Amino acid sequence: MPFTLATWNINSVRLRAELVARLMREEGPDILCLQECKSPVDKIPVEIFTNLGYTHMVARGQKGYNGVAILSKLPMEEVEAHDFARLGHARHIAGRLENGVTIHNFYVPAGGDVADREVNEKFGQKLDYLTEMRDWAHETVPEKSILVGDLNIAPREDDVWSHKQLLKVVSHTPVEVEHLGAAMEAGKWVDVTRQDVPEGQLYSWWSYRARDWDAADKGRRLDHIWATPDISNAAHSSRILRPVRGWDKPSDHAPVLATFDL
Image 1: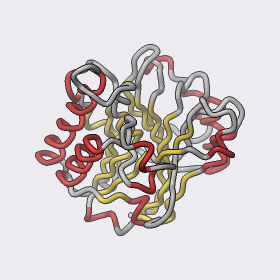
Image 2: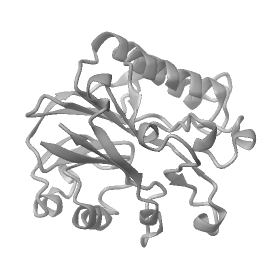
Image 3: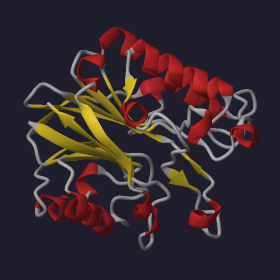
Image 4: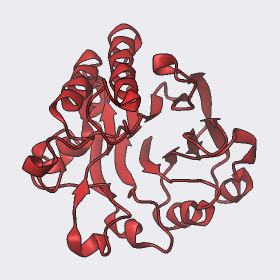
């Protein structure tokens, strides 16, 4: 049975519950993975989503920070929740569908403003998180798995508005790209978005700091959908919903979608 999956850093699920509901009504993904929910699980406004057919949820939350949730029209059971780098953060949750597909929803640490772990603890935590993601993927990722989320790294030169100008900016530095690549290789993950859209500039995030984000278009592709090789060829119709970034009181991220014929 085909299903469409979306991933979106919502930047507060309670503040933007109506935007989530709008996406559900207009796009109707079967599964919606949210990051940066900034809410304890029991405070997520599930009734709004249940009324739109999203009757299943697995989630990890905390007050005011981080938080990940998977909302699904399809039956799903929770199977994993990891605290990589032992940060005590709600940054990972995984659910398994009845067809055996496991969906991992990640919110990788942003890493602060300075790309030097000697002076910026947050950058070190980000690299440690990615290292543990690598080790976990190498040891435990089964077949029929999908990994999505705000990975807070734009790995390719055409995933940012200016490769040259962002080489020393957190999210596109060579050391971050190397760590993300190692995590990808360990799980033999396939970048589904770039499998479908192999060439050209592609962004999913635009800073709030830009006076006119759309005109400036200084974006980065921080949000990703990956799949294990056994199901990656079943993915198609990848797209980033750029117009959502222009909705009223938006997140600074746009949803990323893909359909899987499984």
